[in-house]
Image (cartoon, helix red, strand yellow):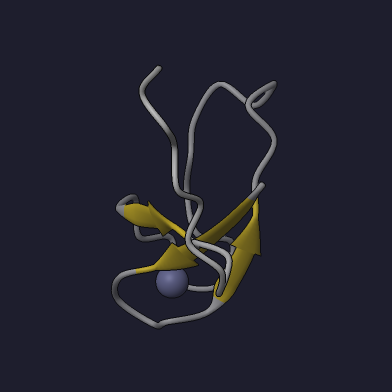
Length: 45
Ligand SMILES: [Zn+2]
């Protein structure tokens, strides 16, 4: 799962097995999910 730090903009690989999500570069704790370039369209059926 790819995340991006909102402070230093570094890409961070985070495993949910870790108890705390935290940027290893700057220690910032707010990371956003990196979305793949293609947007998935979900059909409601
Ligand atoms: Zn950071």
